[in-house]
Length: 148
Image (tube, rainbow, N blue to C red; front, side, top):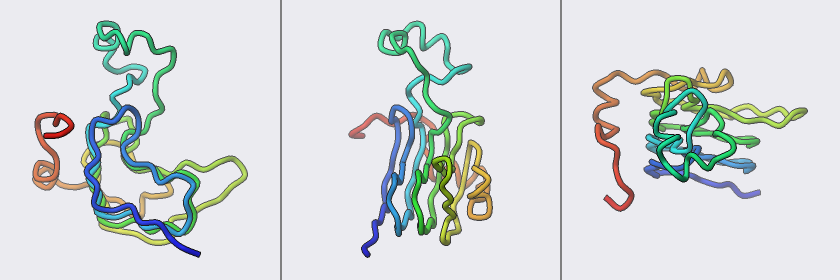
């Protein structure tokens, strides 16, 4: 069997999630930088922007609470050296999504850092909180525009 590698990406200003490793087994997720995702409104946040922005006001649903890196129903994954800043403190920066009746665990990992957001219970052993100096180095203070 083969494997998939998702590495070296800078992922920002996407509508919902940052990076999702989706239903792929035997993978490596490494050295990605993920920040400022979750542009689609979330309940309890940015209500003024939602009501004053036509495309946001037209939405019938809000987004799920993930704006970082998500492993979605993926077995045998190794996760190393990813730096993530979720949009909000109550968004997941790192998490696993698992269908009912299934069971997956991270195969191996480490040196993953979070600068804002929560870490799902199944990934807590592989993710630690970065210090403010490291976060300032990895992520821009101003929101980037695609292409810049």
